[in-house]
Amino acid sequence: MDDSKRAIGLLDSGVGGLTVAREIFKLLPGEDIIYYGDTLHLPYGPKKLSEVREYVENIIAYLKQEKNVKAVVIACNTGSSAALDYVKQKFEIPIFGMIDSAAKKAVKVSQNNKIAVIGTEGTINSQAYQKAIKYESAESEIFAKACPGFVKLVEAGKFSGPEVEKTAYRYLESIIKAKVDVLILGCTHFPYLMPVLAKVMGKDVMLVNPAQETALKFRKELNKANLLNKDIFLNKDIVEGEHKFIVSDESRISKSFLEHGRRFLKLDNLEFKEENIFLALKNRGGNLNNA
Image (tube, rainbow, N blue to C red):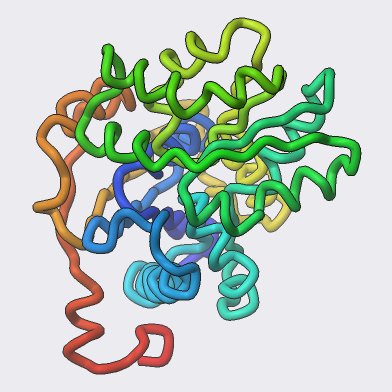
């Protein structure tokens, strides 16, 4: 099979990474996408990075071996922080994370060199964004804040309203006082809250969505590697690619999220199939990558 016609794999700890999937759908409408949300182990944020790395490694092995994907996007900031460098050495297919392109964009657009990043505990504590920003600009002053409550709100399908605004003001008060002019949404759940976050931060603060920056970089790198589906460029009328959504535990997806998420993502056909690769792994007593 022509490598360029194989599907693209995306993975996340749950439903947050669908914000990345949405951006890739828009930029690469003819590509087949297989999305795997590890709802069995969500949230990744509070877990040890070594534990997250093991989950990510096994999901990539599954996507590569069972689904024959041509490339993988770790559509999860915590997963990228914990595992990207490791899995890029482990697997032969191209693998992309969420951190570097967003850090580069933040430095580029900041006028006062005061940049804030919000994310899960795992992402913030890993220092991945802080290091990436400093790599781009040593002069940048960085304000980092873990906001785990945002993840819980999104998973419950709460994207707006008084509870969301109150939580946002509580988390962002110190960042607002610091007078930053750029805020990186360092968790794939956070773009669901973008209207509220924009209101709380004010019109003088630019919000950087890593999902958009990652999708742009991903398209560019796939093109350089000759892995974009050639049929897309040969046909004027692009046939939309096939999109499959898989989770490790379907029972942990809230009905409220499905209702609001379908509207937000413009995915009327958003349905999930359960494939618990970790149960199969437990029964075999090994690592998928070595199975």
